[in-house]
Image 1 (tube, protein in one colour):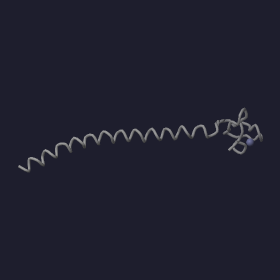
Image 2 (cartoon, protein in one colour):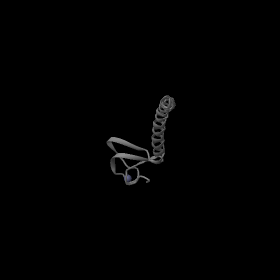
Image 3 (cartoon, helix red, strand yellow):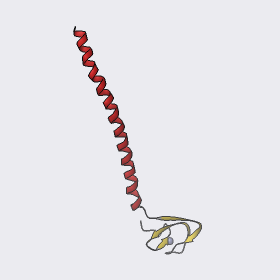
Image 4 (cartoon, protein in one colour):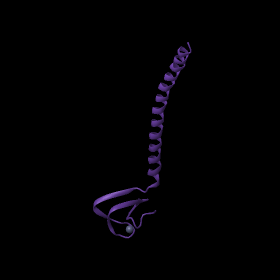
Amino acid sequence: MSEDRSLDDFAPDAGTEAGADGSEAAVDDGSNAAVDGDVDRVDPASPTSTWHADGADCDRCGERVERCWRDGDALVCADCAPW
Ligand SMILES: [Zn+2]
């Protein structure tokens, strides 16, 4: 008789395990969203840079560089960029 009772106690446990699996998937989605948020935060902080295959003259020192940074209306080299 007591054996039948323990079987009944087992059944509800199986149902709880299925529910735990569902919540685990939801946690994975949350961590992905957090990573996207970090990328958005970095973009405004970094100055806008432009690549010139033929090279471009720095508006500050006149040096010819392949990569320029935008400082207001001017395009400047890495040495003159506002860090
Ligand atoms: Zn320069």
